[in-house]
Image (cartoon, rainbow, N blue to C red; front, top):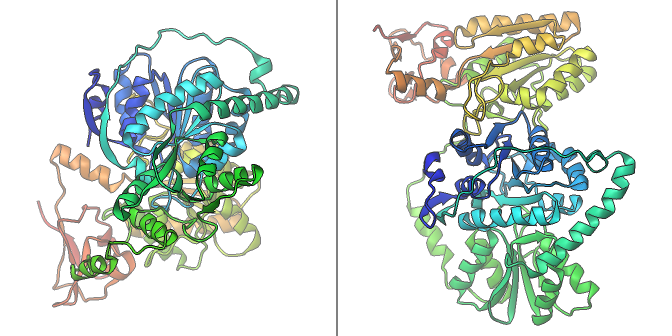
Length: 630
């Protein structure tokens, strides 16, 4: 893994092996970007993870982890309006959160270059949906650029800033998981110096889109996207390579799959590779369609380029067979692979591939099966103790709205405390709705970072409308699932400055919640069960929301701190003489550090996996789990 400081090397011409996300972080420096704001989300996480450590070493540069994507877009947008280059970063679903300012920003435009990096996630490796952000570019009339690899991630980013300033519009910079997490050689360029002073020139009748202003700005926006079409026609980011009767139009990572497929099939074809995917270069596509009798469109997710190509062919009466998703050659779901593209092209040209997939599959079957490894909460995770207590306290009969984060993994047995989830922050608001249409107890859970990102309006709504819901805030002191980024409750900023942390219990009290308590879930599960029962009873009796903050550090943070200090508590073990094989620890808590000894039929703790949280001690009814003496 490239270290953040290495990305600051002022050595023009050197090459380093970088992830595309690291290449984007380097591109920020080379582009002379002055401000970057983001809310972390995989597959874009490494961009912020690197910039937060780079930022203190870049004069006149500012970086922040914003409270959510809407805030991040507004922060970055304001900087661009002031006349400096800025960037906002999010994952695909994060752009949904930022949609409100996104459309307004297109109307008013920017003075300095602005790039919105949006990382889509085909196959939903870490997301709740397969957003295809190209349609945001279409709806918002914003230009969009798509890199195909780490080298393009940097070089095209520099072009995106030039395009943004030429059009006075933000530019969407769309990546996908397979691009973000691919590593390749990237050549370093010059690092410019940032100016010391910036002054904001007032122009309210442009940047305050009251109806009278917006009516004038919409035609302006349409004119700018028309100019963008002209630029796309001449841009070197859109190019043709190869030759052959068959034509292929593609973009992004699919371009790499097409190249590999043609080589594997020993097939000649002419490829139109689009780096600017909105607005599409219509004349270029028209010319390409005219040259070929058959054109294949290879693109992940929605038929975006395919629809444009069919529209252009119909409009200009071009007799060409366009092949893609509509005929079933390619899927509208999940990410592609070289094999998927090879098999689709082979089917289109009615040729058997020289690759014997059966042999490959047979060889794979001959390998020993890997043990199943479903995603689960880490050993020692404080969330496990909290969910065990919630289910025990409510006997599994309550409704459990969940949220976006590690704790969504509580959906699996035996915890089974995730019943409904829409998006970030929805646990509290869905709890509000459920409480009004059912007499069941409703206990919702939300993480600390998510609480600050989008949970606050739900708390206000619950207080205002007297929703009888129990809210458990799982405060593990970090944004855990996306890589341990800071948030307002951690006391550290994106610039690595220490600040007073926002206290969740005080925030809830300030919002009007009458019942607010804080408890350490790792102190005693028995006490935690009592606290949850008390909270649920109070909620039912008072017909009002209650909050319990379950506060303990992420197990990975605790383990890291122990390694740093060398201070470890005594290990835990199961006293086989006391254990009666009730299996409560295995069947109810299900910590991955515990397993069943087939010879004795008793629980055993794996010392190499145990994070020394001690939760299992409270769970064991026999008192068989003990801690060794110093």
